[in-house]
Amino acid sequence: MSSLWHQASSSTCRQSSNRSFIESTKWDELIHVYRRSQIIESATTRPESPGPSLPNATLGDGTPESIKLSFRAGGDKIFHERLKGALVQRKWLLQNAPPIPRSHMNEANPISTYSLTDGYTPTPPPPKVVGIAGLERRGAELRKNNEFVIGSAFEDLEALMTSAKEVIAMAERFRSQNSNGDGDNDANSAEAASLLSDMGLVTTKDMLSGGSGADRTYIAELSRNLAEFLTDDKRGVLRREGGIMSLVDLWAVFNRTRNGIELVSPMDFERAATMWDTLRLPIRLRRFRSGLLVVQGRDRTDDKTVASLLSWLKDLHSIPPAMSNISEFGAVTGPSVTWDWQLFGRGVTAQETAERFGWSVGVATEELEMAEERGALCREQGLDGVRFWENFFAEIEVKVPKTKTVQQLEQAELEKRLRESGLL
Image 1 (tube, rainbow, N blue to C red):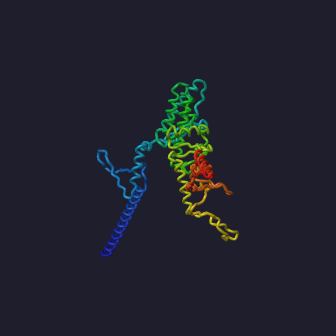
Image 2 (tube, rainbow, N blue to C red; image 1 turned 120 degrees about the vertical axis):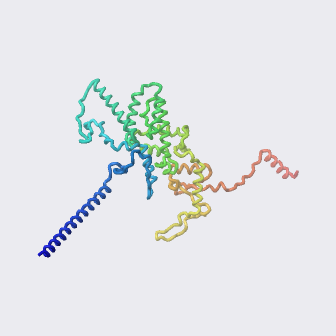
């Protein structure tokens, strides 16, 4: 009986020990899974701050004076540039800043206020006030709006570019208020034009006050804007046109970039182009013999143009012209070239010249005629139009007989008569 009780008790002890072992194993597994989930959650959860966070680190009482960063797979240069930009723009001040309020300039929409809990809550518009009180309120709202525009425009570079139109409109309002006909208008106009040029904005005539001085300032600033427009490598206006383009084409391209706002008249445009030489800008205006006005770089001369034309015509000595006449059955009937093309090359038309150098047909015709006047080219008038060749006649030596004077002719006539009479 005792042995049976001992076996039963031992089996009961084994079962209880197994149960406790299983339960402890399950708890260990649950704790392990919980800790693993906490680690994964802490690894995948991104903190609100864009920078690294050290919640459990103890750095002592002092503030760290330096932070060491290591880059294993590059990216140090990009990080350095973005860090400098963030330090210049002080972007850490915008982390906890409230969002930009909605536009309150639209009278049709009610004014809205922002709160951290409810967000935007529309408020009823203020009652209309007429008379002197209404004018005073309107002036106060205008001043408040000006303060808001200036504060938001110069806070950040991106905000400045966004608020450029509002800044221009405000500058125009200041101009209209200050234009009282005094003698300081010219100086104020010049200063305003220079400030707008520094901001990268195109000066318009309406930004400046009236008067001859303001008109001269507008033309000078327009001339500088045109020079910057032509020399901008990003736009590449002159580069696409082969380094030279007509003034009419430039006027159309420049006004097209202004999106139909503050278009420049042809008269003001020509006056601005004529001031390039006075202002010593890298662009010059050139007039051909036919009266065509073209725009080109100051480093571009007629000698360089003639040299480029002759170099192209010399390259044609190694390129055969149209091979031969081909019949309707595809058979070659005979050569169409009746000259030694390897020695003389071939003639070119204005259309071919325009395609070769990227010029317009009118500019190509003027450049070919200019080279003809200089004696570098000669023309051939045929059924297919005008072709320009190299001037090989200039290389031919022509012996011109010497002309005799009247006394020499009389002396020769006298000697002839004496020989006929037998005296000589």
